[in-house]
Amino acid sequence: MLAAMSEPTESRRQRAARRAGEFPDPPPPLPRPVIDSHTHLDITVSEAAVPGGGDDPVAALIDAAAAAGVDRLVQVGVDVASSRWSAEMAARHPALLATVALHPNEAPRLADLDEALREIEALAAQERVRGIGETGMDRFRTGEEGRAAQEASFRAHIAIAKRHGKALVIHDREAHDDVLRILDDEGAPDRVVLHCFSGDAEFAAQCVRRGFVLSFAGTVTFASATALREAARVTPVDQLLVETDAPYLTPTPHRGRPNASYLIPLTMRSLAETTGTDLDELCAAVSATGERMFGPW
Image 1: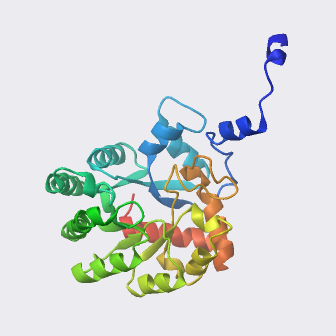
Image 2: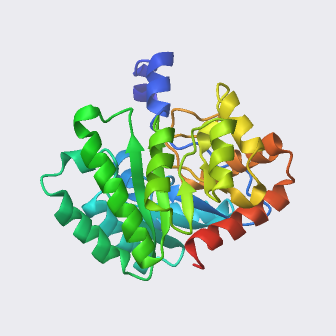
Image 3: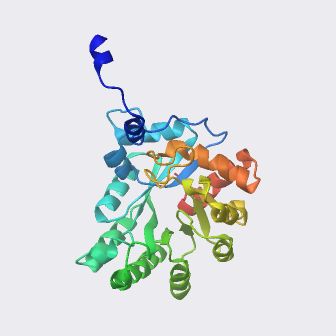
């Protein structure tokens, strides 16, 4: 005890930095089970570890989610390696389904885009792989020099989704017009999910008219996200999903700390308040829409 007392006191800044790497305490569970429509368990384990520890980090994350009322997760690939891992985990864990793809910012970096796309198409044939994504367009991180490869990759993923009858999961960052233009050119698949929806009410209305599903992340809880909440209000409850994009985009009041599927209740409660929807009703709708997009678990 004396040795412990003699250690220097942790400063406020040091404590804030340390806590930034800690998972928040779990919120109250949801009244009905829902899905997390977009998570990266591989990145969560490698960058943020696991809430509560455990010998099997993937199982621990699944168990923590289930305890919060999030009993089904969609594990998302962003390159060939993570897509293989996602398919393998979905085959191993009944609570998981997988999507596979080359992230829009990955495509321009590849020496052989066609070979990587062949790998994605092979994975798409697996029964537990239920979506092609995340694919799309990103004008924030990819400059003009990479735009042609990014667009070619997006068009190829649209074709893969249609050939295999899988949902298309779209990454759209500062590229709303490009995404709609390309989808209109190619003809959208029957099931389209805009992951981490980031548009305003006008863009949401354009997507809704096309029959797309909008997936809202923890960003909808941020104080600055007025336009995003307006988009949620114009989205019919049966065209709305919820996601974490874990380990990123942690909802308020834990912004800046690691995210995981067990924190979905914070986003769900925020969306229920924003849209004026009863929480129980919203949970039921999100669950049904998730299974309409990705099929039964």
